[in-house]
Amino acid sequence: MSFSAPESLSEQIARYLAQRIIQGQLKSGERIQETRVVSELEVSRGSVREALLILESRHLIDILPRRGAVVAMLTEEGVRSLYDLYIHLLTMLAQNVAKHWNDHNIQPLLAQVHAIQALQQSDDKMAFVESGFVLMRMAFAVAGNQYLADILEDLQPVLHRTYSLAIRRSPHETEYAARFFAGLMDAVLSRNQDALPGLLQDYGRHQRELVLAAMAEEACPCV
Amino acid sequence: MSFSAPESLSEQIARYLAQRIIQGQLKSGERIQETRVVSELEVSRGSVREALLILESRHLIDILPRRGAVVAMLTEEGVRSLYDLYIHLLTMLAQNVAKHWNDHNIQPLLAQVHAIQALQQSDDKMAFVESGFVLMRMAFAVAGNQYLADILEDLQPVLHRTYSLAIRRSPHETEYAARFFAGLMDAVLSRNQDALPGLLQDYGRHQRELVLAAMAEEACPCV
Image (cartoon, rainbow over all chains, first blue to last red):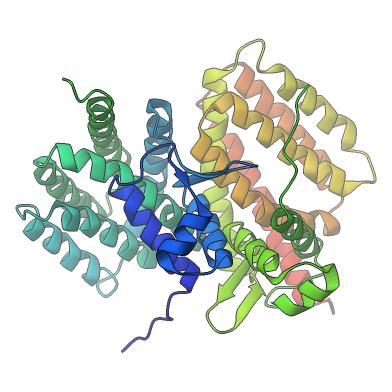
């Protein structure tokens, strides 16, 4: 049995605001006013300021001197940069898992890949998106690089934001993604490290293009 | 002429504490008591709490539930993980610079490599260490990936910490490092992307071994 420590108040506020950004209720460039969050959630100003620092380290907002917090812009260049980096880091993660897995520590990952297959036809697309990130987090324990885990954890919210945008507009994407996870797991299980960069680059390119298409549609709802 | 925004109070406190960790005055596992920092620096508790969150995102401290902030431990496994990741990211950075430099944007980097050569014989070893990080930051502007820049910026303090430890014990290291920077710049200038992974892996391995040796000596000053 494991106990996890209760989240700090600032972490809870950060998660609440992160959800609103990920779900698209707070838009790129929109100001987040400290005083409004304070009165809306009935929390102290100090906790809100801490929550904003947490969100900044998770790439969801920018804190500008004398202007305060604004929701980070999603630009084409930014999305390209994000996926370039993400695929580099995911490849490193997958290669470390391929190197370090054993019959015991791989079990939760196998179960999660099955859970992902089961979810691909579900109407709950957001549950599907989250199931992929759960697999990534399980991989941290096998890969054994805490810095890599921390950095991917900090990138997860902005990836959650971009991928949610893509899935809202391309619901059949889940079938492609479920196939990718199955193929990835095969390569990891056969310790086929050479196959991993290509697999992940294809996946990254595919997801990046979906996100860019969704951003273009959102910018011009007329089409 | 460029104006930079004044640093926030919490950023100033974070920098002050970071310096003390980097210089080794605050040791691995040592507790950082909020109330003590509050009275020592005569600042508010809120600013100190914000500074601690900044230091956590820079991998210098851990904030433990119900125990507060402690200086992050440097372990052998941690240092291996850190340099694995650092070299991956530096390779990505150097490859992007090799791809995107032009006659105009490369000038500050060339000047900085000369400054590094001039500093290698100086007694001010800490100025030398910092000059390498200045080059890395100049590379961000050419490489053009803001996420990569943010993540390397967040890793910089812990790398500053480990490298300072190594240089304090191996002062002649500066000559090796100066040669490395010159060779790296040659490969970048000739857009020789294939040479970069090998060059950077050698450098990473070398620096990692210096750090591990310094850690072993520090753990057993008897030898």
